[in-house]
Length: 305
Image 1 (cartoon, one colour):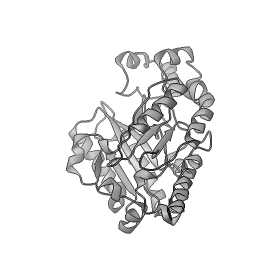
Image 2 (cartoon, rainbow, N blue to C red):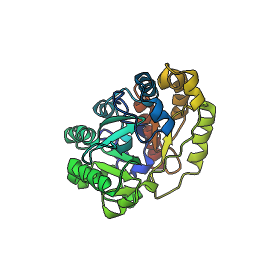
Image 3 (cartoon, one colour):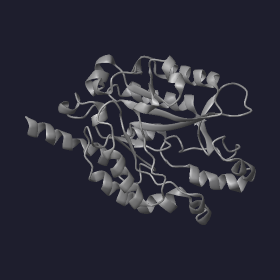
Image 4 (spheres, rainbow, N blue to C red):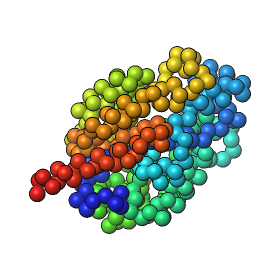
């Protein structure tokens, strides 16, 4: 973000093209522990078998890169699902996608170290699913977020005011979106409805691309950011047919080129793309392709002057 041309630094972040990752934390999940509370009861019973947990892992992992590696590769939006561990003493919170991931605190610290070294970079953390958490767990997590980032946290503001220049002037680097009513009690928690992320829920790449086009057309002109989830979602029968192949080999590899072509045809702006997320962001030149879309805004600025 620090290397974006000066003409783009005064545009709202909601008008820029920003690369993100889907289930950003899933580069490591624990197939030795029980499955998480985000899974159906039948799956939990089956997962008592070690082999079943290994299969779940193949379908739970959607990224290969750590937070640090994603950040270094240009990813700036992170899709986060969190949970307590039922039966564990204390209020520790973990990332979760079928299986438990690393502690949230460890992930936040990793991100903060990157931000300390790159003071002009801005990240979006979207806490959008919570499992096995009561209010005390939420307050514990929110205090962890505050401890990790402190003055880097950007308080809720009119979306159109939030530009790179605004963030740099205030020395803010982190926007937290928190999809839970408790966001109202903390000025640095943005409500979830400011970060809509329509989900296609399909295995068909043509249906996905049509959905992305339709939801972009319905995007609010003002007042929110917008996530285009350029991801395919396996159904139960998909998993059953391709048990040991996993998500990457079944859906991602063969469809990523077509998805990337869709990305290349997009334009950011008021009614254009904003944040675009993908699985396995390193498999193609995803982040660089999304960032390059901002050149179109530069051309627009030059033609207006």
